[in-house]
Length: 322
Image 1 (cartoon, helix red, strand yellow):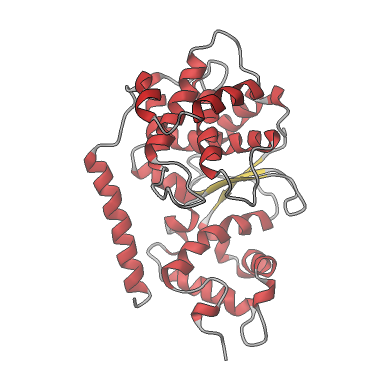
Image 2 (cartoon, one colour):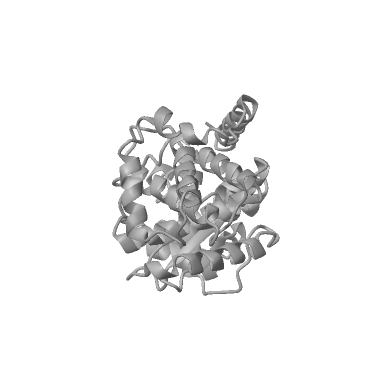
C-alpha cells in the first residue's frame, strides 16, 4: 500500500505545492548545460546576458569566480519525467522510497498535481525563485538560477524592465559573499544581513557609472523591486528583511556609488562600510532620510498584492479539498 500523502517526501496540499518551488532549481542543476533563454518566450534573454557580462567585468578585480553560469528555471523542466524529474528526485529523496512508493510514483504524483494547476507547467509559483550556488561537491560550477515566475511577478507589478536586472545583480552579489565567507549556502544564519548586503551591493553596481549606470528613475524602480520581495516574518530565522529594510539597503548602495569620485571601492572596503550601516538598520527613519525620493508602492498596489495571495491560497484549498 502506498504511504499516506502526509508521509510522502513533499507532504500534502498547498505545502506540497510550495515545496515544488525548492525542487525546481535542483531539477535545473541536474540538467546538462544548454543554450539558455530567460522568460517563457525568451523575452529577457538579451537583458540578462548583458547585465551578467557587465557585472562580471565590474567585479572582476574582487577575485570572484569568472565562470558563473546563469540558468533559468522553466516549468517545462518538470515535464521531463525520465530525463530530469526522476534523476533529481533520486538525488534529493533517495531514502524516502521503497517497493510500495517508488520514485516513479512520486514523479507521477508531482506531474498530476501540476497538470491540475491554472496554466499547468507554466504556473508562475512553480518557478518563483532566484538563488546562487557555488562550486562544490554538490555543484560542478557556480551558478545563478532565476525562474520564469520571478520575471512574471515583476512584470505584473509594472517593473518588468528593472526586475530582471535586480534579480541578476542581487544573486551575483551572493557570489561576492561566498568570496568574503559571508554566506553559508546551507545555513539561514544571519539571513537578513546576507540579503540586505546583497541588495546594497546590487544597487551599488547598478548605480555606478562603470556598472549599470542607471538613471534616477530606473534606480527608483530598483528600490521598489527590493521593497516587493521583503517579508515581515521577523521572528523567523530565515527572515530576509522587511520591505522597508530591503528598499533602504538598495538606497544605501546607490547613494554610496553616486557619492564617490573613485572608479570603484575595494570589495572589502565596501563591506566594511555596509557593516557600519547595518549596525544602524533598526533605526530606518534616520538612515533613510537622504533618499526619500524613491517610488513606493501605493496602498492600492499593496492591497492588490494581498488579494492575489489570498486568492491563491483559497484556490489551493479548493484544489486539494481543504
